[in-house]
Length: 256
Length: 223
Image 1 (cartoon, each protein chain N blue to C red):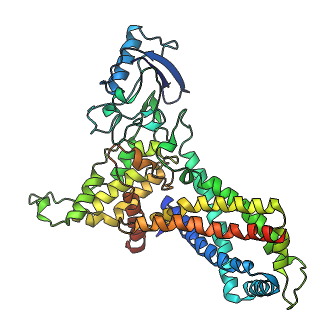
Image 2 (tube, each protein chain N blue to C red):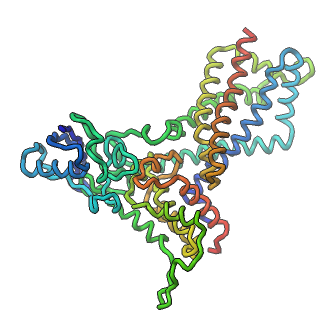
Image 3 (cartoon, rainbow over the protein chains, first blue to last red):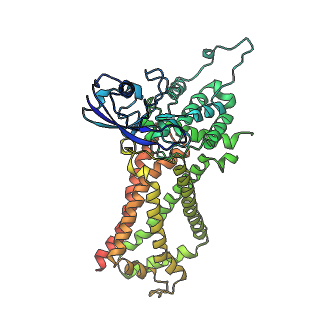
């Protein structure tokens, strides 16, 4: 396959970026999207692919390359993680594209996710949201209780597990027209509030995590549902409604 | 408690609550308007008597103040949220395909809301202002003749078109807004959310259609 790539190039956080066009050839349909970028970068390094402005290899986030770490983050042809559903960029394969196609590749766009270089964004805003309340208190005095000793309704365990599959990649923020982090935050809130282990911090958790989410500069939720459609782990919009409910409940009942 | 005033979620709760209250208002308003389908002198007097009741009854007065406040709150809150949302993405994508993941109405609530606000201002100056501050003639039973003002306004094809187009905008606004408001308030469950969504779609078609039929009916029967 021969492809035309339009890639966002930006030297550093302060510089002004631009879309730069590259031509890549010898792409096979069984390559993953990241392997295709690897081919591009090898071509730029060897000089086989023309890089007029001398930007050098394209910087992009990646780690496990098996769809579970949440590092890869490319806005491909107008959608986070590209045209596929329930896949991350690393699990997106070139057979989804056709020979001669032009592919647009951009970083996540959000004030809360500043660009570090090219396609790499700083997503530590998510870490700070987790730090604000995405944890449970565990007795570590030496007689730690087995988690399975606590009875949990099957439906709650299933819903908590579904929410827990969120890998924190940020596609929800990238997809949202408001750059809202509601799907991410609500998945973490829902996961813990559904389990007995999360009960002691239930009110404080949702209030603190929402507060941190607001401070990071994410936008507001309009329930468009774009986040859930683009989510590689298909996190349900139901979690957002659950967080709305949890937040209302916490503010009305919390002693704080 | 401060979370119910300052947080992003609080702004959404107020948006949803005022929006749902305005849905109730639409039902009441349409029920009253349906009297315009009653023909002849009888219909005229009944409508004018109803208009007098709606401007003098103390309970209705309280409701109308709440309605005005809701519209104002919904507009201001909407602007605050939209500005914050724009700030959250200072640089846009060079290439984006939002139609792949969301419906058009859900992404254009602000645009639709602006059309609706322009309509509300036009609508109030056409009827409410004239009833409240204008010097209108009285009908044969001695009531202020608002019915005559309505009949006259809808002789104009431009007015009829503005009214019908505005009702389409309200329909699209409600198509997303009705069920979205419930989700924002945390009212969501797999057993009844599909029902709320269907009710919302029905509401967003039936109510604006009912409103739109009146100017069309008046225009066709009086010209």
